[in-house]
Image (tube, rainbow, N blue to C red):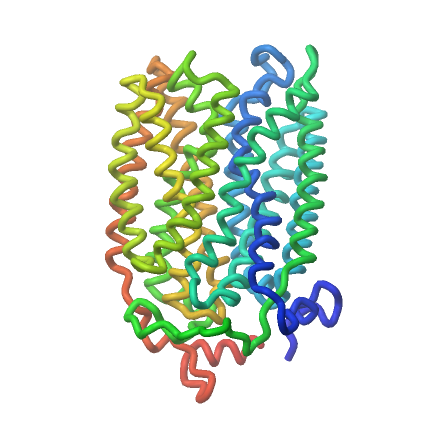
Length: 467
Protein backbone atom coordinates (compact mmCIF):
# COMPACT_ATOMS: atom_id res chain seq x y z
CA UNK A 1 0.00 0.00 0.00
CA UNK A 2 1.33 3.42 -0.90
CA UNK A 3 1.59 5.72 2.09
CA UNK A 4 1.73 9.41 1.49
CA UNK A 5 4.30 9.50 -1.27
CA UNK A 6 2.35 12.14 -3.11
CA UNK A 7 1.53 10.05 -6.22
CA UNK A 8 3.51 10.97 -9.30
CA UNK A 9 3.52 14.73 -8.87
CA UNK A 10 6.56 16.99 -8.86
CA UNK A 11 6.75 16.84 -5.05
CA UNK A 12 6.64 13.04 -4.78
CA UNK A 13 9.56 10.89 -3.71
CA UNK A 14 9.39 9.00 -7.01
CA UNK A 15 10.09 12.19 -8.99
CA UNK A 16 13.24 12.84 -6.92
CA UNK A 17 14.92 9.43 -7.38
CA UNK A 18 18.32 10.09 -8.95
CA UNK A 19 19.04 8.76 -12.41
CA UNK A 20 22.23 6.79 -13.13
CA UNK A 21 25.28 9.03 -13.20
CA UNK A 22 23.92 11.57 -10.71
CA UNK A 23 26.69 12.82 -8.39
CA UNK A 24 25.95 12.45 -4.71
CA UNK A 25 27.98 15.63 -4.13
CA UNK A 26 25.06 17.64 -5.55
CA UNK A 27 22.97 16.82 -2.48
CA UNK A 28 25.00 18.69 0.19
CA UNK A 29 24.49 22.06 -1.60
CA UNK A 30 20.75 21.37 -1.70
CA UNK A 31 20.79 20.73 2.05
CA UNK A 32 22.80 23.89 2.63
CA UNK A 33 20.27 25.98 0.68
CA UNK A 34 17.69 25.08 3.31
CA UNK A 35 19.84 24.92 6.45
CA UNK A 36 21.67 28.19 5.85
CA UNK A 37 18.26 29.90 5.64
CA UNK A 38 16.59 28.36 8.67
CA UNK A 39 19.86 28.75 10.59
CA UNK A 40 18.90 32.42 10.86
CA UNK A 41 17.17 31.37 14.08
CA UNK A 42 20.54 31.49 15.84
CA UNK A 43 20.91 35.16 14.91
CA UNK A 44 17.54 36.22 16.25
CA UNK A 45 19.18 37.71 19.36
CA UNK A 46 20.37 40.68 17.25
CA UNK A 47 16.72 41.79 17.10
CA UNK A 48 16.13 41.59 20.86
CA UNK A 49 17.58 44.91 21.99
CA UNK A 50 16.19 46.91 19.00
CA UNK A 51 12.76 45.40 19.68
CA UNK A 52 12.87 46.71 23.26
CA UNK A 53 12.98 50.25 21.77
CA UNK A 54 10.38 50.15 18.99
CA UNK A 55 8.38 52.91 20.70
CA UNK A 56 11.08 54.75 22.63
CA UNK A 57 13.56 54.57 19.69
CA UNK A 58 16.63 55.76 21.62
CA UNK A 59 15.70 53.98 24.87
CA UNK A 60 12.92 51.71 26.08
CA UNK A 61 9.55 53.34 26.71
CA UNK A 62 7.06 52.02 29.31
CA UNK A 63 5.00 50.28 26.61
CA UNK A 64 8.03 48.71 24.92
CA UNK A 65 8.60 44.97 25.23
CA UNK A 66 11.04 43.56 27.80
CA UNK A 67 13.88 41.15 27.04
CA UNK A 68 12.15 38.43 29.06
CA UNK A 69 9.06 38.76 26.83
CA UNK A 70 11.11 38.75 23.64
CA UNK A 71 13.08 35.71 24.79
CA UNK A 72 9.95 33.61 24.33
CA UNK A 73 10.02 34.15 20.55
CA UNK A 74 13.19 32.10 20.22
CA UNK A 75 12.00 29.57 22.82
CA UNK A 76 8.71 29.03 21.00
CA UNK A 77 10.50 28.59 17.67
CA UNK A 78 12.77 25.90 19.12
CA UNK A 79 9.86 24.25 20.95
CA UNK A 80 7.85 23.96 17.74
CA UNK A 81 10.96 22.82 15.89
CA UNK A 82 11.04 19.73 18.09
CA UNK A 83 7.29 19.19 18.07
CA UNK A 84 6.97 19.49 14.28
CA UNK A 85 9.98 17.25 13.63
CA UNK A 86 8.39 14.60 15.86
CA UNK A 87 4.90 14.95 14.37
CA UNK A 88 5.99 15.20 10.73
CA UNK A 89 9.07 12.94 10.86
CA UNK A 90 7.38 9.95 9.25
CA UNK A 91 5.59 12.25 6.75
CA UNK A 92 8.96 13.68 5.70
CA UNK A 93 10.51 10.20 5.45
CA UNK A 94 7.71 8.80 3.29
CA UNK A 95 7.08 11.85 1.09
CA UNK A 96 10.71 12.65 0.37
CA UNK A 97 12.86 15.75 0.87
CA UNK A 98 11.48 17.91 -1.97
CA UNK A 99 7.96 18.12 -0.56
CA UNK A 100 9.35 18.79 2.92
CA UNK A 101 11.72 21.51 1.74
CA UNK A 102 8.95 23.30 -0.17
CA UNK A 103 6.66 23.16 2.87
CA UNK A 104 9.43 24.50 5.09
CA UNK A 105 10.08 27.38 2.66
CA UNK A 106 6.42 28.44 2.72
CA UNK A 107 6.19 28.28 6.52
CA UNK A 108 9.51 30.10 7.04
CA UNK A 109 8.65 32.97 4.71
CA UNK A 110 5.13 33.14 6.12
CA UNK A 111 6.48 33.34 9.65
CA UNK A 112 8.62 36.35 8.79
CA UNK A 113 5.77 38.16 7.06
CA UNK A 114 3.34 37.60 9.95
CA UNK A 115 6.02 38.79 12.38
CA UNK A 116 6.60 41.90 10.29
CA UNK A 117 2.90 42.69 10.57
CA UNK A 118 3.11 42.09 14.33
CA UNK A 119 5.95 44.60 14.60
CA UNK A 120 4.06 47.16 12.52
CA UNK A 121 1.05 47.12 14.89
CA UNK A 122 3.18 46.38 18.00
CA UNK A 123 1.47 43.07 18.76
CA UNK A 124 3.86 40.59 20.36
CA UNK A 125 1.38 37.72 20.11
CA UNK A 126 1.49 37.92 16.32
CA UNK A 127 5.28 37.56 16.46
CA UNK A 128 4.87 34.57 18.78
CA UNK A 129 2.49 33.09 16.18
CA UNK A 130 4.56 34.03 13.12
CA UNK A 131 8.18 33.44 14.01
CA UNK A 132 7.53 31.26 17.06
CA UNK A 133 4.85 28.82 15.86
CA UNK A 134 4.84 28.92 12.04
CA UNK A 135 8.57 29.61 11.86
CA UNK A 136 9.19 26.83 14.39
CA UNK A 137 7.26 24.36 12.23
CA UNK A 138 9.42 25.42 9.28
CA UNK A 139 12.53 24.83 11.37
CA UNK A 140 11.48 21.29 12.29
CA UNK A 141 10.45 20.16 8.81
CA UNK A 142 13.35 21.92 7.09
CA UNK A 143 15.87 20.62 9.60
CA UNK A 144 15.16 16.90 9.24
CA UNK A 145 14.31 16.86 5.53
CA UNK A 146 17.85 16.39 4.14
CA UNK A 147 19.40 14.42 7.03
CA UNK A 148 18.30 10.85 6.30
CA UNK A 149 18.72 11.54 2.56
CA UNK A 150 22.38 12.42 3.01
CA UNK A 151 23.02 9.39 5.22
CA UNK A 152 21.64 7.20 2.43
CA UNK A 153 23.96 8.90 -0.07
CA UNK A 154 26.98 8.51 2.27
CA UNK A 155 26.73 5.13 4.04
CA UNK A 156 30.53 5.05 4.13
CA UNK A 157 30.72 8.26 6.22
CA UNK A 158 27.40 8.77 8.07
CA UNK A 159 28.89 11.20 10.60
CA UNK A 160 30.43 13.34 7.90
CA UNK A 161 27.15 13.22 5.96
CA UNK A 162 25.06 14.50 8.85
CA UNK A 163 27.74 17.10 9.52
CA UNK A 164 27.37 18.36 5.96
CA UNK A 165 23.60 18.43 6.26
CA UNK A 166 23.45 20.21 9.57
CA UNK A 167 26.46 22.54 9.48
CA UNK A 168 24.46 24.98 7.39
CA UNK A 169 21.97 25.38 10.23
CA UNK A 170 24.80 26.39 12.54
CA UNK A 171 26.32 28.69 9.94
CA UNK A 172 23.13 30.49 9.01
CA UNK A 173 23.66 33.11 11.70
CA UNK A 174 27.12 33.90 10.32
CA UNK A 175 25.31 35.38 7.32
CA UNK A 176 22.07 36.46 8.99
CA UNK A 177 23.59 38.37 11.91
CA UNK A 178 25.53 41.04 9.97
CA UNK A 179 22.89 41.05 7.24
CA UNK A 180 20.12 41.75 9.75
CA UNK A 181 22.09 44.54 11.42
CA UNK A 182 22.87 46.08 8.01
CA UNK A 183 19.22 45.91 6.93
CA UNK A 184 17.99 47.46 10.19
CA UNK A 185 20.49 50.30 9.81
CA UNK A 186 19.39 50.71 6.22
CA UNK A 187 15.73 51.09 7.19
CA UNK A 188 16.29 53.04 10.44
CA UNK A 189 15.14 56.65 10.74
CA UNK A 190 15.04 59.09 13.64
CA UNK A 191 11.48 58.00 14.39
CA UNK A 192 11.50 54.37 13.29
CA UNK A 193 13.53 51.22 13.89
CA UNK A 194 13.68 49.09 10.73
CA UNK A 195 12.80 45.69 12.18
CA UNK A 196 9.58 45.30 10.20
CA UNK A 197 11.19 45.92 6.79
CA UNK A 198 14.08 43.63 7.70
CA UNK A 199 11.66 40.79 8.44
CA UNK A 200 9.97 41.27 5.05
CA UNK A 201 13.25 41.23 3.11
CA UNK A 202 14.55 38.17 4.95
CA UNK A 203 11.32 36.25 4.37
CA UNK A 204 11.43 36.83 0.61
CA UNK A 205 15.15 36.10 0.20
CA UNK A 206 15.02 32.92 2.26
CA UNK A 207 12.01 31.60 0.33
CA UNK A 208 13.89 31.91 -2.96
CA UNK A 209 17.00 30.09 -1.72
CA UNK A 210 15.03 27.30 -0.05
CA UNK A 211 13.16 26.70 -3.30
CA UNK A 212 16.50 26.26 -5.09
CA UNK A 213 17.38 23.50 -2.61
CA UNK A 214 14.05 21.73 -3.15
CA UNK A 215 14.65 21.70 -6.92
CA UNK A 216 18.19 20.31 -6.69
CA UNK A 217 17.67 17.56 -4.08
CA UNK A 218 17.54 13.88 -5.09
CA UNK A 219 17.24 10.54 -3.27
CA UNK A 220 19.26 7.45 -4.25
CA UNK A 221 17.70 4.39 -5.86
CA UNK A 222 16.85 1.60 -3.41
CA UNK A 223 19.77 -0.61 -4.48
CA UNK A 224 22.35 2.19 -4.87
CA UNK A 225 25.74 2.00 -3.14
CA UNK A 226 28.80 4.23 -3.68
CA UNK A 227 31.57 2.79 -5.81
CA UNK A 228 33.95 0.66 -3.76
CA UNK A 229 31.66 0.67 -0.71
CA UNK A 230 32.58 -1.84 2.00
CA UNK A 231 30.16 -2.42 4.87
CA UNK A 232 31.63 -1.51 8.30
CA UNK A 233 32.98 -4.24 10.53
CA UNK A 234 30.79 -5.63 13.27
CA UNK A 235 30.70 -3.36 16.33
CA UNK A 236 28.62 -3.80 19.48
CA UNK A 237 27.55 -0.15 19.27
CA UNK A 238 26.86 -0.17 15.51
CA UNK A 239 23.82 -2.28 14.67
CA UNK A 240 23.16 -3.82 11.26
CA UNK A 241 19.53 -4.31 12.24
CA UNK A 242 16.66 -1.85 11.89
CA UNK A 243 14.24 -0.84 14.63
CA UNK A 244 10.73 0.37 13.77
CA UNK A 245 10.22 4.05 14.54
CA UNK A 246 7.73 3.64 17.38
CA UNK A 247 9.52 0.63 18.87
CA UNK A 248 12.57 2.87 19.32
CA UNK A 249 10.55 4.79 21.92
CA UNK A 250 10.34 1.61 24.01
CA UNK A 251 14.12 1.29 24.33
CA UNK A 252 16.21 2.86 27.11
CA UNK A 253 18.79 3.86 24.47
CA UNK A 254 16.38 6.34 22.89
CA UNK A 255 15.67 8.10 26.18
CA UNK A 256 19.29 8.11 27.33
CA UNK A 257 20.32 9.76 24.06
CA UNK A 258 17.34 12.12 24.49
CA UNK A 259 18.69 13.31 27.85
CA UNK A 260 22.25 13.61 26.52
CA UNK A 261 21.08 15.75 23.60
CA UNK A 262 18.81 17.83 25.85
CA UNK A 263 21.69 18.57 28.24
CA UNK A 264 24.09 19.51 25.46
CA UNK A 265 21.44 21.66 23.79
CA UNK A 266 20.20 23.40 26.96
CA UNK A 267 23.74 24.46 27.80
CA UNK A 268 24.34 25.98 24.39
CA UNK A 269 20.96 27.34 23.39
CA UNK A 270 20.51 29.58 26.42
CA UNK A 271 23.71 31.38 25.49
CA UNK A 272 22.94 31.54 21.77
CA UNK A 273 19.52 33.01 22.40
CA UNK A 274 20.96 35.93 24.41
CA UNK A 275 24.55 36.03 23.13
CA UNK A 276 24.37 39.62 21.92
CA UNK A 277 22.77 41.10 25.05
CA UNK A 278 24.81 38.92 27.44
CA UNK A 279 28.18 39.90 25.98
CA UNK A 280 27.31 43.60 26.11
CA UNK A 281 26.20 43.37 29.74
CA UNK A 282 29.15 41.25 30.91
CA UNK A 283 31.64 43.58 29.23
CA UNK A 284 30.05 47.08 29.24
CA UNK A 285 32.04 49.56 27.21
CA UNK A 286 34.26 46.81 25.79
CA UNK A 287 31.70 45.09 23.57
CA UNK A 288 29.55 47.44 21.44
CA UNK A 289 26.33 46.39 19.65
CA UNK A 290 28.26 46.00 16.40
CA UNK A 291 30.96 43.94 18.14
CA UNK A 292 28.23 41.83 19.78
CA UNK A 293 26.74 41.13 16.35
CA UNK A 294 30.23 40.12 15.23
CA UNK A 295 30.46 37.77 18.23
CA UNK A 296 27.15 36.16 17.26
CA UNK A 297 28.53 35.68 13.76
CA UNK A 298 31.80 34.21 15.08
CA UNK A 299 29.92 31.80 17.33
CA UNK A 300 27.86 30.84 14.31
CA UNK A 301 31.05 30.03 12.42
CA UNK A 302 32.20 27.73 15.24
CA UNK A 303 28.70 26.27 15.44
CA UNK A 304 28.88 25.46 11.73
CA UNK A 305 32.47 24.23 11.73
CA UNK A 306 31.89 22.15 14.86
CA UNK A 307 29.03 20.33 13.21
CA UNK A 308 31.23 19.09 10.40
CA UNK A 309 34.44 18.60 12.42
CA UNK A 310 32.95 16.79 15.42
CA UNK A 311 30.60 14.63 13.32
CA UNK A 312 33.47 13.60 11.06
CA UNK A 313 35.62 12.88 14.11
CA UNK A 314 32.86 10.61 15.43
CA UNK A 315 33.34 8.36 12.37
CA UNK A 316 36.78 7.55 13.79
CA UNK A 317 36.40 7.63 17.59
CA UNK A 318 32.74 6.60 17.82
CA UNK A 319 29.60 8.54 18.75
CA UNK A 320 29.64 7.56 22.43
CA UNK A 321 33.24 8.71 22.90
CA UNK A 322 32.48 11.96 21.09
CA UNK A 323 29.72 12.76 23.58
CA UNK A 324 32.06 11.92 26.48
CA UNK A 325 34.35 14.65 25.15
CA UNK A 326 31.42 17.10 24.93
CA UNK A 327 30.30 16.45 28.50
CA UNK A 328 33.80 16.70 30.01
CA UNK A 329 34.96 19.78 28.14
CA UNK A 330 31.58 21.48 28.61
CA UNK A 331 31.77 21.09 32.38
CA UNK A 332 35.25 22.61 32.51
CA UNK A 333 34.49 25.53 30.19
CA UNK A 334 31.24 26.59 31.85
CA UNK A 335 33.03 26.65 35.20
CA UNK A 336 35.62 28.98 33.65
CA UNK A 337 33.18 31.50 32.10
CA UNK A 338 32.41 33.46 35.32
CA UNK A 339 36.15 33.89 35.92
CA UNK A 340 36.65 35.37 32.44
CA UNK A 341 33.94 37.93 33.21
CA UNK A 342 35.40 38.81 36.61
CA UNK A 343 38.86 39.21 35.07
CA UNK A 344 37.50 41.35 32.22
CA UNK A 345 38.96 38.92 29.70
CA UNK A 346 37.00 39.30 26.50
CA UNK A 347 39.36 36.90 24.72
CA UNK A 348 38.86 34.22 27.39
CA UNK A 349 35.09 34.67 27.28
CA UNK A 350 35.01 34.40 23.48
CA UNK A 351 37.31 31.36 23.42
CA UNK A 352 35.23 29.47 26.02
CA UNK A 353 31.97 30.07 24.23
CA UNK A 354 33.34 29.38 20.76
CA UNK A 355 34.49 25.92 21.90
CA UNK A 356 31.20 25.32 23.74
CA UNK A 357 29.18 26.32 20.69
CA UNK A 358 31.30 24.09 18.45
CA UNK A 359 30.34 21.15 20.69
CA UNK A 360 26.73 22.30 20.77
CA UNK A 361 26.65 22.16 16.98
CA UNK A 362 28.68 18.97 16.96
CA UNK A 363 26.10 17.32 19.21
CA UNK A 364 23.35 17.98 16.69
CA UNK A 365 25.42 16.74 13.76
CA UNK A 366 26.59 13.60 15.56
CA UNK A 367 23.25 12.47 16.99
CA UNK A 368 21.65 11.28 13.70
CA UNK A 369 24.63 8.96 13.18
CA UNK A 370 24.34 7.87 16.83
CA UNK A 371 20.71 6.93 16.13
CA UNK A 372 21.73 5.14 12.96
CA UNK A 373 24.25 3.11 14.95
CA UNK A 374 21.61 2.18 17.53
CA UNK A 375 18.47 1.71 15.40
CA UNK A 376 19.62 1.13 11.80
CA UNK A 377 18.96 3.20 8.69
CA UNK A 378 15.40 2.35 7.67
CA UNK A 379 13.57 4.71 10.05
CA UNK A 380 16.44 6.88 11.22
CA UNK A 381 14.87 10.08 9.84
CA UNK A 382 11.61 9.57 11.70
CA UNK A 383 13.41 8.51 14.90
CA UNK A 384 15.59 11.60 14.59
CA UNK A 385 12.44 13.70 14.35
CA UNK A 386 11.10 12.20 17.58
CA UNK A 387 14.42 12.76 19.34
CA UNK A 388 14.35 16.46 18.50
CA UNK A 389 11.67 16.91 21.16
CA UNK A 390 14.78 17.14 23.36
CA UNK A 391 15.56 20.34 21.46
CA UNK A 392 12.04 21.59 22.21
CA UNK A 393 12.58 21.05 25.92
CA UNK A 394 16.02 22.66 25.77
CA UNK A 395 14.53 25.61 23.88
CA UNK A 396 12.48 26.32 27.00
CA UNK A 397 15.01 25.37 29.69
CA UNK A 398 18.05 27.18 28.27
CA UNK A 399 16.65 30.68 27.65
CA UNK A 400 14.52 30.54 30.82
CA UNK A 401 17.57 29.69 32.92
CA UNK A 402 19.57 32.54 31.39
CA UNK A 403 16.83 35.18 31.26
CA UNK A 404 15.00 34.66 34.53
CA UNK A 405 18.01 33.96 36.76
CA UNK A 406 19.60 37.09 35.28
CA UNK A 407 16.44 39.09 35.97
CA UNK A 408 16.28 37.76 39.55
CA UNK A 409 19.91 38.72 40.18
CA UNK A 410 19.50 42.19 38.67
CA UNK A 411 16.35 42.76 40.75
CA UNK A 412 18.37 41.89 43.86
CA UNK A 413 21.06 44.46 43.00
CA UNK A 414 23.59 42.08 41.48
CA UNK A 415 25.59 44.01 38.81
CA UNK A 416 24.61 43.02 35.29
CA UNK A 417 28.18 41.98 34.54
CA UNK A 418 27.91 39.31 37.29
CA UNK A 419 24.26 38.34 36.82
CA UNK A 420 25.04 35.30 34.65
CA UNK A 421 27.44 33.48 37.02
CA UNK A 422 24.84 31.28 38.73
CA UNK A 423 23.48 30.10 35.39
CA UNK A 424 26.95 29.08 34.20
CA UNK A 425 27.45 26.79 37.21
CA UNK A 426 24.00 25.23 36.69
CA UNK A 427 24.93 24.54 33.07
CA UNK A 428 28.16 22.88 34.23
CA UNK A 429 26.14 20.62 36.54
CA UNK A 430 23.94 19.54 33.64
CA UNK A 431 26.99 18.15 31.85
CA UNK A 432 27.58 15.79 34.77
CA UNK A 433 24.08 14.39 34.26
CA UNK A 434 24.76 14.03 30.54
CA UNK A 435 28.03 12.19 31.17
CA UNK A 436 26.26 9.65 33.41
CA UNK A 437 23.46 9.02 30.88
CA UNK A 438 25.95 8.56 28.04
CA UNK A 439 27.83 6.04 30.19
CA UNK A 440 24.77 3.79 30.35
CA UNK A 441 24.15 3.62 26.58
CA UNK A 442 24.57 0.05 25.31
CA UNK A 443 23.51 -1.88 22.20
CA UNK A 444 19.74 -2.22 21.60
CA UNK A 445 18.24 -5.53 22.72
CA UNK A 446 17.66 -7.95 19.83
CA UNK A 447 13.94 -8.26 20.65
CA UNK A 448 13.42 -4.77 19.17
CA UNK A 449 15.05 -5.63 15.83
CA UNK A 450 12.84 -5.83 12.75
CA UNK A 451 12.72 -9.24 11.05
CA UNK A 452 10.59 -8.71 8.00
CA UNK A 453 11.35 -12.21 6.68
CA UNK A 454 9.47 -14.07 9.40
CA UNK A 455 7.61 -11.20 11.12
CA UNK A 456 8.84 -12.29 14.54
CA UNK A 457 9.99 -8.87 15.76
CA UNK A 458 7.78 -6.19 17.25
CA UNK A 459 8.80 -3.71 14.59
CA UNK A 460 7.92 -5.90 11.64
CA UNK A 461 4.44 -6.52 13.00
CA UNK A 462 3.87 -2.86 13.69
CA UNK A 463 5.22 -1.79 10.33
CA UNK A 464 2.97 -4.24 8.51
CA UNK A 465 -0.07 -3.13 10.52
CA UNK A 466 0.54 0.56 9.78
CA UNK A 467 1.63 0.29 6.14
